[in-house]
Image (cartoon, rainbow, N blue to C red):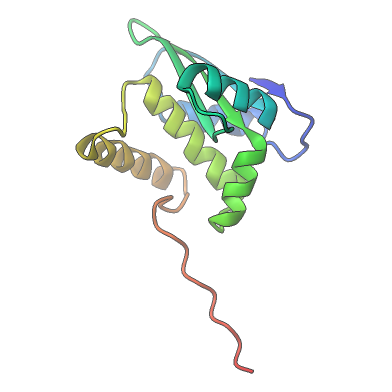
Length: 146
């Protein structure tokens, strides 16, 4: 685990590790790095040709005999998305860590059939960890009558 941000509300190592292990095969060497927007933007530009920061980037190096790779999470983007999606920060981090690990394992979402398989796997793992389906928007809170 690498923290390249001073943010105090990043989930702890134990939680991040537990979420990654839930999506991992038996043998893995994965570095989780939590960064700010500047680093996320630079990495996204360098490796994906996009000029903005993104929530998670995965860099795989090997799948066998041991899964090896890096997952970079952009804390400010994760926070904004969690708020916008009415999720807890922990729930969104859990989803993105699992999403990143699944990318390292070869899952993708470029094609609809591949995306459906990846999302189904994410849902199963998150449900086993006690989190809600990340692809179902939360029900709107009813407004009080005036």
